[in-house]
Length: 492
Image (cartoon, rainbow, N blue to C red; front, side, top):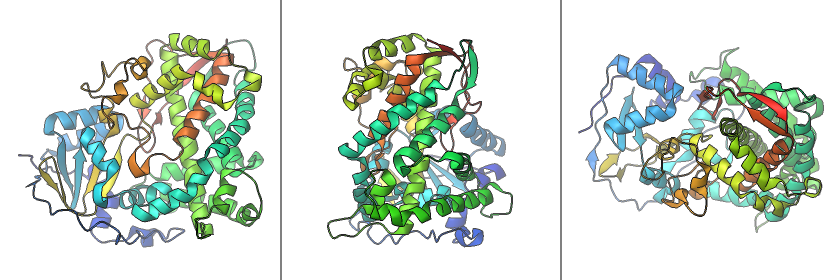
């Protein structure tokens, strides 16, 4: 039998928005957000889910000190936290935080349940609204069921083959120019990789998604995105002046005011940037996005595109610095390509680059957790998961399970080769791009961008870190190095 838990103040702080929701209090009205973020009517949830008949869960029980250590570990070392929780309590763990039920689910079957979401028993929107809903309301990840499917169908126009080819030819010269500026002299240079990569991916997102050069506005928009993402860590439901959430809401208004005046011209024009394609997207009946929808989507896509890609690129640069033989392997693979006439099909040659990318995402997934809310009670592995619970599954945990990965703590890109295919041992053991209806809509765009960046970096440079360096990782809200990843850069 699984036992109960005493909760300290810090753990209450971490899930306070969820507790407010459970108590029926509306923090959205208290904080006076820019837009009404009320959850959509869930009337489309399937009615044919069978009544739950499993064993009721009993909450785990820890002392105040143990609870404090567990919460601290979830921030300092999320992988160790999930491994400890799983090894101690098993695949299904109920934690009580105030009146809120928090259910931790582990294993590939938990991932499958979360991603396939049979009969809409789980809600993405209800969970992510509590985390980033005040800042990125109604983004694609913050929608459920038919509403999500409708918005995703319209958005597909921006990720079709013709659009992707256009993005490729826009990005390639811009990446080449940006990476050429990383090192201006022959001497070795110490560089903090994360902020440099982040600026480059934001500039690329502006070019491809907005169809413009941000110019003098780049720092303003970059700071606005930084403040909105940072504000998602704020757990107190009051937007007091000077707080993270207050600055985040203010930053969102800056972005909305920046994008709103462009919509009319984008609708009338024939530009092929993503912003323009979203403005002109229509269904078979001629219906398209509202102006509010467009702003919500472009805000979210700009954040998701440059923050998650920056996370992946930084992790790749780290593992390549730790294992420099792989820099040589990747460059040998790329060296025959013509950098002056690079074509989209050339990226198919970069097979080992794909392995390194996938291995970096296995070790350091941009999102380590998949939070959802249960729309109704349901059974999982013989236990009844209560209605209204926060249900969390953990990609970072299954990415390190020994039954699916040989020596899972080791960096070994060849595990993704055709000869080994460890990621094929189970379809839900490797899920850095989510899956099911919420599979990352931009995953092919992300891989294209990552390969282009790696091509132009490896063409010019080698980089390294001290042999005893281990990258400290901040896992929430999006994985990134706490120290920015200091590297030594030198010309090839």
